[in-house]
Length: 455
Image 1 (tube, one colour):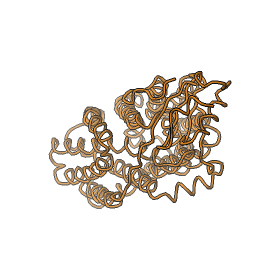
Image 2 (cartoon, helix red, strand yellow):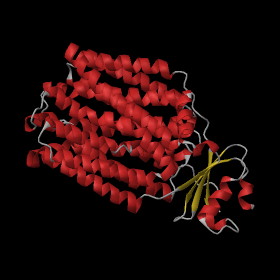
Image 3 (cartoon, rainbow, N blue to C red):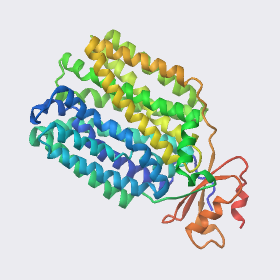
């Protein structure tokens, strides 16, 4: 029996799940990011297109995502994560096919709405939290964030290439293909865990939703991801035009984005790990929010200088990636047992609604005061977030144990093993991997590991 493996290393199950889910994110995000720098340049291809409607076509995806994240997350708590992820990917592929065949702006918008209905971000994050121990979760979330950053850089390179050869329709067909490939990854490579909980409220979906909404710490984290993606979308209202103004053509913007993203991850990872080990996660989160505000102010004051702008953007992304990894990790530790999918659904709703408003208000600020107005809006939002986040409480981490099912005397199947382990005093929840013959236990201070040897 292996009660507690090395907490500094991922287990084989965690590594397999993380690689598969990171690949899923890369494939799916490629399809999203490839369209962003291209669509406005091809607006003449669509009957009835206006700048406002093209902007709506870009932003409506975030709105439909926001509408569907909670239902999909709640559904995943009932029927399992993988079925919901497959349903979401099929919807995403269908929406991509509709957009690829669109010849009017109305059909393009409809296709984007259907794409957004495949809202699986919260469910994927919940699945990653299911299959990782708390000691490894921030690391896993950070690696997932790196995969998103990689897909962003790759998309900025290949998106304009595909569009120049096959038009916007080719981009959407590629997006549909990536979604179908993602389904293969989910079915073949992502482990299928069975989760058991000692929490009696998990049987009631309304109770789960109400409990998530009433928890002040969860609300602060939901508000945090709202502000974080508000800032990101608003920032990209001004940044591409500024880079063009500094003499960098659109097809070369990746030469800025990719190094900045990679460098930000190199700086962020050791800082995050050190804060985790030292028990200073709250301080690191609050500092990162402050840095977002400072970087936005720096950009507003010095955007006329190319080097100063790049420095401010680099500072922004160090803080952004720190928060992108820490916020979902904190949420997974804060939420009550059995409600992780629902909580992640609410969290992702806040994320996409923040992106929608960030794009909308960022566009308004740009129209009123140009780049200075956008960066001032970002700075104001960051400092407001800092005030609202200040009372946050970081939950005490629960201990983790890994149990080999074969060592449990008298247990004949994985279901019986899970029920037996969930009934032990001090066990909060159990995740069983039947194929691998393992179970992950989250336990509180009352748990005695000697009980694992007893029936």
